[in-house]
Image (cartoon, rainbow, N blue to C red; front, side, top):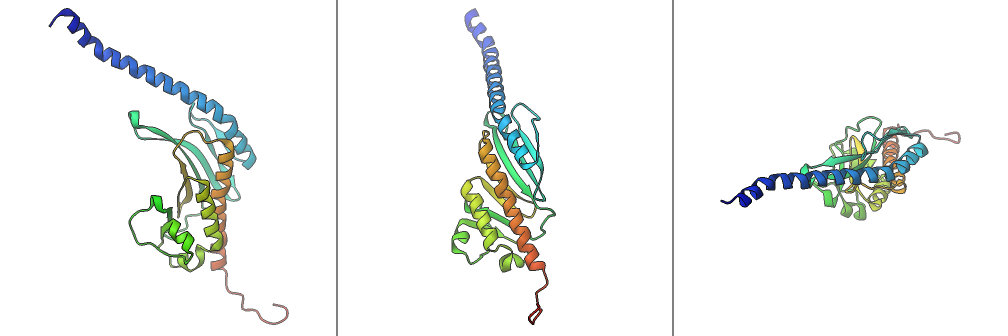
Length: 214
């Protein structure tokens, strides 16, 4: 092995390391730029809803607080490691208390294996799979108003699930603009509010009064 070949062999690891460093630096610069562009839009949306805005890292905006009695959160998360890692945007509305219904509604593209329940609404049943432990779910909780709210959210894009804890939307991209964020926050909250209404209706005692002053 001559000297030139030996030097080339020794330099290869350093070249690979240098390329990796350049990639990381440029990636961080890109995230910084995207974060700078997104920050004022998210901050404006936070003010619009009376929520708090934070920027815990150059890439990650974080909106959180309570609106219409429900906790709302929007944040950027990292999924995966190394070169395969990606940044996603999650938006969620949390129920005031966990529903304890065993409720899990997902678009069919996210469906898990399991028993599918039916609402009797063919359009909804074709678009979503869901399971529930509480029989009231098929008996009235997922009523017209709840179904409309879920369908509208799905049409807007990104719906991941409606469950006992929250209504979750996940965008497989980092750059979610202010208009999309505001619309999504309102839609996830609306699903929670519609579920609140449906539960109150089912839990209310029946009106048995009669006569002219009922």
